[in-house]
Image (tube, rainbow, N blue to C red; front, side):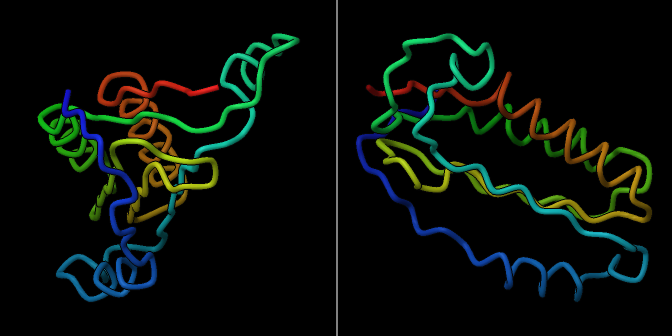
Length: 136
């Protein structure tokens, strides 16, 4: 895992990402684009997912990722049926509540393919590619 003490990498423009996607060689094959924008939230993961009472509010997060695993996840997603465009950006280091954690853009032919690809990629990134340590 890459660990960094720096934070707040410059967040790319979703508008520019979409413009680039719509001008690439597969744009005419895409009928849908979906974005995911993960953000550091104040509510702890344990409270948000397992409804654990008495959890302290999150004040920030230390975030890192394994770039090799990310590349593999992108390749697997790109090979899914009907998927023609996949782009991922991940932040790193010490992040504050409200900071962007990740951006993901998926473009594909039809809604079921694009929704499934976005769901699969974000799940894989979150479970196999990144390390998030909440700060309280």
